[in-house]
Length: 373
Image 1: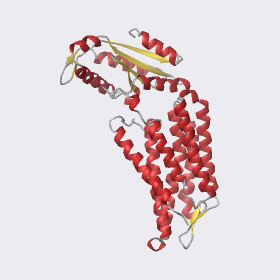
Image 2: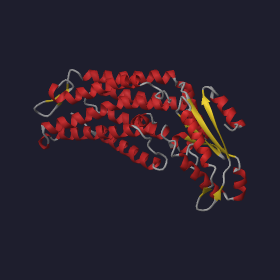
Image 3: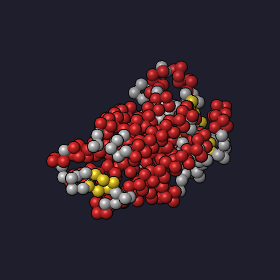
Image 4: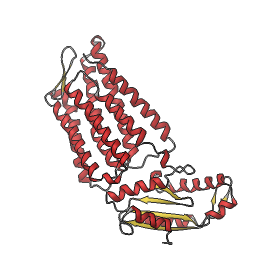
């Protein structure tokens, strides 16, 4: 007899993670534009994982309830709930692998062919589930509304295993792109998820898979999705620590990109002229304007008096146009409700890896200053 205590606990954990993520990131996160850009955004993929997990857990809970109370159900209802569960849950292994690749930066710069190959196992699994009401190959429901595994069920465990192997390949290949703590978290999450899957595969009556997966996702939220230490409090864009982490990922995964720099030369003058609250408001206004051209997670307050913007632009043309746009904008004054200031700036472009090839070289260049481009 199935029990849904673990699935109920998993559903509760998922809802907590979802509500907390929305509340905590409400003012910190602006979704990028474009389907591909969103799939290459760590937080977007995390929220996708939460949503499909909530759907699969809810479907599982309802299915077990109706298994206990078949008089309140029907074949169509039970079949529908199982279809929803498998369609949503099959997305989890692929989504987690993509999430880990976003964490270490290895998802960037891949060809369309790579992503097509990446999606094929997932799409095949979804197709098999969509056709299952007719083929009964994945699962079937008997006349007593009891669920049974079909002959192709092992294939789904193989698909999940394939994505786990893919994730580990990219994890070990680019392990230097992330910190030791992040590495430990990723390994722990994979062990939890695989452990739950293995137990439930051997003991179908023990519905622990979703619960252990929910604990794994809770771990991701607490550690990898906590951005409070990576934000500049005055402007709510990323800080120097986040800048270093981002460039480490990009450099270790051999990306070609540009960093557009804008440094306010008369910042100290205005800091003496205005109070700190007015200066914070002024810099927040500048940061808000920069968000027209780059996502908030690509804008960094590297200095107190300026910003660095990471532009994923191998050719450099977008970076050059952005630098010109910045120079033109700073030719006119900035105004807030409290102050008006004519900010004198110097802009520059650093091309990675043409100008710098390591994080140490980049830090030395930025700390020592840069010349007008």
